[in-house]
Length: 108
Image 1 (cartoon, rainbow, N blue to C red):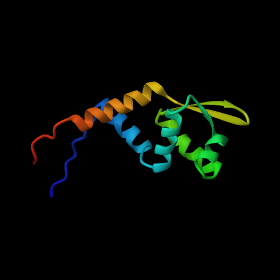
Image 2 (image 1 turned 45 degrees about the horizontal axis):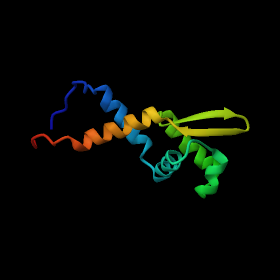
Image 3 (image 1 turned 90 degrees about the horizontal axis):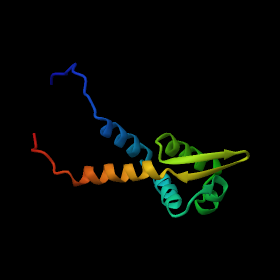
């Protein structure tokens, strides 16, 4: 098999979708997003009551979602309030809907 040295170019949509997909790659993160989508905001401590995990674990997952732009945090020590980033959440849903709606091209 011959290797290529050509650089693969990705569109902005592909890169953004991959970022969202990576953030959605853990069931706890899906649960957090469902929780945040159903209410305006939530403090990290409150999430541990709804998702029975250590606060440090919830915080790690929130960090991944935040880095992907899917949630926003308001830091007011010692509490952090998280909300879903509505614009990016809608964008993510649109990207995935378009991806799954596309017809597959011819097989190689």
